[in-house]
Image 1 (spheres, rainbow, N blue to C red):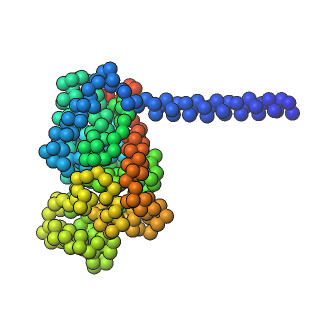
Image 2: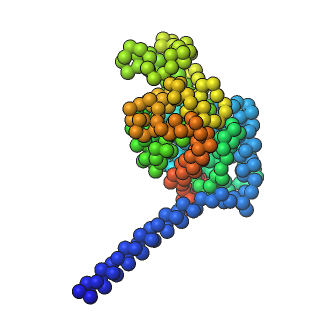
Image 3: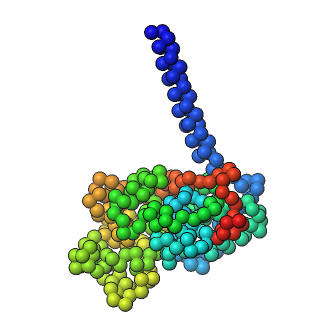
Amino acid sequence: MKGTSNTFNAFSSLIIIIIMTFLGLCLVARSQLTADFYVKTCPNVAKIVRRGVQSAMRNEMRMGGSLIRLHFHDCFVNGCDASLLLDGSGGEKFAAPNLNSARGFEVIDAIKSSVESECSGVVSCADILAIAARDSVVLSGGPTWKVLLGRRDGLVANQAGANSSLPSPFDTLEVIINKFVNVGLNVTDVVSLSGSHTFGFARCATFSNRLFNFNQTGSQDVTLESTMASELQRLCPQVNGDVNKIAPLDRNSVDLFDNHYFKNLIDNKGLLGSDQILYSSETAATTTRSLVEIYSNDVNLFFTDFVNSMIKMADISPLTGSAGEIRKNCRVAN
């Protein structure tokens, strides 16, 4: 019996060592991104990116929402590796969720050029996207946070992954939650990150399905407030309409990063179907509705959760160390 006990104890110790080693490796992997990654190699990178975002938003406030969307759509496919920025017919730019929709590439190009002039071959396009996303929020009146850095750029795009992994304005809430879970995010992240729709615009193509014969009912989506629906029907007529016309995601608070988006959802004024279902769908009753209500009344909690979710999202499968590369041009691999 003593021999059996010793064997058991030795086996248990081995299991504990394996588990501790695994946890240690996980911590090391996460700690590879640090706020001071460029402190010696490119100390002015944050200032350069901020100037570039300021210039772009001074020219067009809408660009703030576009830049954070680039970061979001990049991280959900292949992780945060700037694969979305790669040109080519097989690239993620030409996936259905991005085609004629993702924008701001020229802003990232200009920022990258400025960064390269100061410290060539040092700062990744993926890190520039992460910093620009933060700055677009701050410059719109939202919270700030320390962006963890040290990502490297991917070598290939993944158009199929973009088509299948990115949440769609036409998805059910169950599908959206699953897509978040697939990249390590949870229900709180779904709601807080959806709050980035507190600024920016969307094309008629992404919400006109709610305006006429919704789900073959012969009428508009009943969860869309009637006056808003009438205005959108005039903007996006059913016949001979321009699918590229745009409407603000956060009605009556277009450019400000605040919690007004959640107030709109409670009033049935969410623009996209994927916005309104956070409050109005059956699934929302047991998943997201309570958070919408809480955030609508507590902007500080929304800001806190949003920052935490942005940091989590920006840590989805980053390439670090010797993986990937530092692109000199964000549009092509070296």
